Length: 247
Image (cartoon, rainbow, N blue to C red):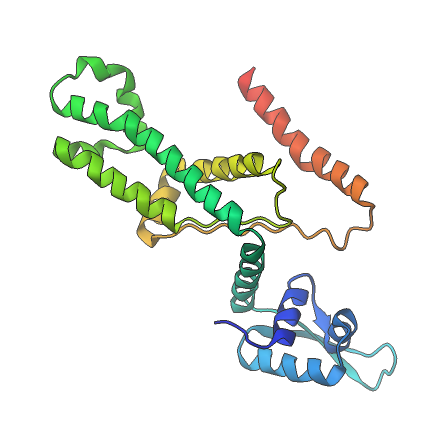
């Protein structure tokens, strides 16, 4: 489902942060209450939001104020809206990511195909060192292919996956940041697909989507302090664990 009404889109984005009443939404979006009232009723009828509670108005106890939140369908739509907004700001990065993914897959193909063919041809002794890799990565199924079919099959797979890949970040990465940002995305993708059961489900579903959003708008800190807090609360912990694994 997509929304054509801009007011409804703004409400979905606002309710993704917290429960709000019509009055709260009107104040936050700086919109007329009548427009918000109409849009909220429309979203309710579409099953995208739901009423969570009713409380007496702080201004007039005789009036009940209703609060709303997104339904699961609303949250799914929120993710779609965010991805769409991000994609419009990150098209160059998307194309570069596709190329990076394709190059990475090609490097793997160039490495694995000769070894698969050699293994099929009976040169087992030369491949003992990488037998464990085949077993762990689940590539044994490819050994059933005829040698001449291995490379075309993997090439077609790599082309389809890289062309179907999508990647976007917000705020957009500066030129000097793009490589590091794409490397981080590639690492996340690699780590997710290392989980055998999850990798199998991705193959069954035919799609992998990751929506990761950090909303710092409600944090009352200067940008410099937010940046430091992000490092010490998230980055430093990861670096510490990585250092321990290497030691």
